[in-house]
Length: 266
Image (cartoon, rainbow, N blue to C red):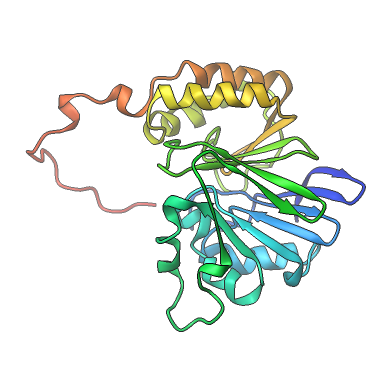
């Protein structure tokens, strides 16, 4: 069941937030932008989510109507299922040019019609990507947290799909809806952003760009979407956040290992 972020005329934006089963993986959102008979998937996820997502999409779109698979970055929870989207649709995979030679490592060598002609590689400054009679705008979001990171803006709905930026780490099964009180929501964002964003300089450049863009809502890949005053409060907090290399010092780079590694407990 999808969450309708926007609908007007022939244009729809739908979020799928509840496809990760229990503790199988980190909660993640997938997005469909549909314009008439043309569609784009944003950050469709890995193999864990491929079958549940296809079933959920069946209410809204047929596989042959998917024109674009838009990838904010290269992580497995973003694009781990790329081989299946290449096999079962005619979609073009859109990603940063930095990942154009890495994403194909997820695709079996024997697959036909999965070569470079199926990829659209975005330059560092971003790109306008045609979707029927409209477009999706790929915006630079580099080092937040990937070195070749993109955000995607839909000019019809004025939704900014921000990828990992603005994400909150919430439990699977948490009801999806707009953040109403930023201060109470902030704890599920803070640790993630301090560790996964490269540094405050990059954050400020991105926030300045977003403020100029003035989106109607910001919708991240993990957690809940933002709009209105809560969105403004979140951007203000993000603008002043020390993170990444800002927090690094000699104590973080010691050759001597002090403790044994901790067994996996997902």
